[in-house]
Length: 450
Image (cartoon, rainbow, N blue to C red; front, side, top):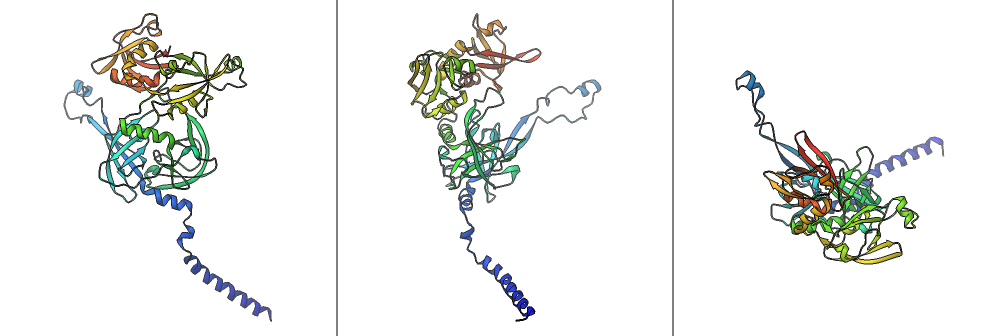
């Protein structure tokens, strides 16, 4: 056979193969390309929604005297508007067929109107049922009849490092964006910008791309189960996203639906992280544990026979390395139930059952008086100091009756009621930061919790 005949046959064979390939590819059933990721996205994406909010901003200068008009006369200048509206975007996940939407608190904070947009373009107005700034979670209720598509919850405690995770949200307003990555780490601690936000040590870290607008969106496992609520990113990093684990979010969800707020857990303990010198004193190789520095009277900790100077090394199945670990472990305990606490003392380790209760609101003034040396009342539109205990830190630095308190631990307050509502979290910390109104502006004051 001549060389040209062989070449001709090869060319014919190649031509036939090229002709057949597109036909064969087109005939491959979609089911062979619909892998686990595609199935998970198809199942859950209808329940992931876009959240747009309107925030009504009051202009504080709208009613102020016009200096130009005062000096030069005339009323031709247009006065500033009394208010204006700011818009923001985020994401949310429907978690119940009745139309409960789980999202981040910072997505809907201060919103005067909330609109939910579905994958198919439908828009439904939503009502805020409750929110919690410390956990950065909020629950909305769709204001139309369902049933609605919803995501089924999985378990964040059973996640494995390296397993595939899927993030669905609306980054930069781009509806139903899907990114895929892995679980990079668990147990990450993300402290808030100030002491108002308690540090939790259970955030999920993923390299699935999360961008602004993804906040409140869904983090899924490969089965299409909701395992986290996307919450934060590291702006200077790449693919460093963090999500609130669904085990913690589900407890907050139930509290917000039932009570409209998250009832803060109360043990009566004030703690600090163990340092190297204290660890050496207790014979520990490393500084791991939470040191008890104060116990409030008639509190669950007192009933559990916890002592000042104890080092908390474990709560239930959780090993406690620092305060954030303790807050995380306590946050998982249903209110009214007990959990075993491992305590290290000079004579060895003991275990006592500690009951986790809801903070007794009626005792907030008493605890504030004992811890900070002040009580707070109402004067007009502001919370004011009502009494100052002689010999307290508040008294020695010059706090006195009638001074206005504008902020507590970075949170703006307008009433004594709001002040006392913020106290349960404040009493868990070693100190409380107040912003006191003076003639020269707001003056920061730090009071130790004693």
